[in-house]
Amino acid sequence: MRKIIGWVLLGLGAFLLVTGLLATVWAPGQVERTPLDTNSTTYLSGNADKLNPATGETEAIDVKATSITKADSKRSDDEVIVFVNTTCLVIDEGDVPDCVDAEDPEARLVSATSDVFATDRSDGLAVNGKYLPAGAEEKEGLVNKWPFKAEKKDYPYWDGLLGETVTAAYDSTESLDGLETYKYRVLLEEVEADVVEGVQGVYSQDKFIWIEPRTGAIVNQQYHEVRELEDGTTVLDMEIGFTEEQVASGIKTTKDNKSQLDLVTGTLPLVGFIGGLLALLAGAFLVFAGRRDETV
Image (cartoon, rainbow, N blue to C red):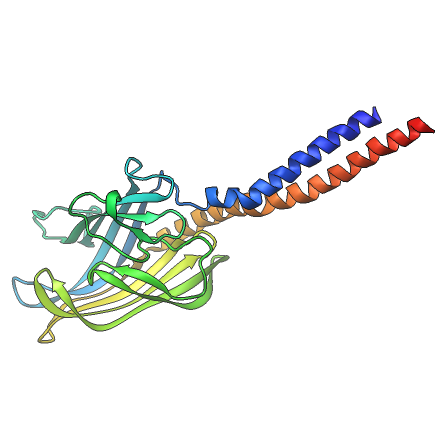
């Protein structure tokens, strides 16, 4: 009986060691990838001074934005994920829905945009070519998330208004409800740009982005954006960021995702190697000790 238990332990030890090896070498490449079933809705709110084209006056308004990002699984593959994004910014007054159309009788629509883009499922960098439909804007740098195991360094970050990458500089490390995040800053000061379609002006932005480094997820975002005409007239001066509910939801989701990654890439290898080694030693002792007893 002792010999049988010994062989069982040897088999178990070998299995655990292989499991630990797979969890170390193979599993990270499988789990550290953006899921193909990604479907997220992000809510932002804030305030703005906006030029009214009809009156030529600047109006102070409260605003809210809804951004919906869905993965297009048919265009995606093992290495690249394709996203479809729609974003709607409306004047936040009364019982306004998340989005209204251009014919809204109360003229509450500020802007509505749609976009298709592709990113590498591991490092988050934009991918172009065959993944994009005809006419889609090609992008570079990071778009909607950071890479897994993000670092305390600068990253190229896509700016849709400029149509080019800007620098997202590591700023500090900050805890959000017990979740450690890396805080990055995008600072643009009076850059020439089309502040309204076909109208040249000056564009400034001061944006902070909080990233959970293990998953690369954006947990919070706050920014101040200013658009001015060449004569100094303010077209838009907006301060907006994730709502408190959005931040709380993002923290919870990210904590869960981080725990799953840590389990697969951290706990499983540890259990596999330590448990496997102990099982092999115990099994070897029972098998070979049993053989010595038989020869006595």
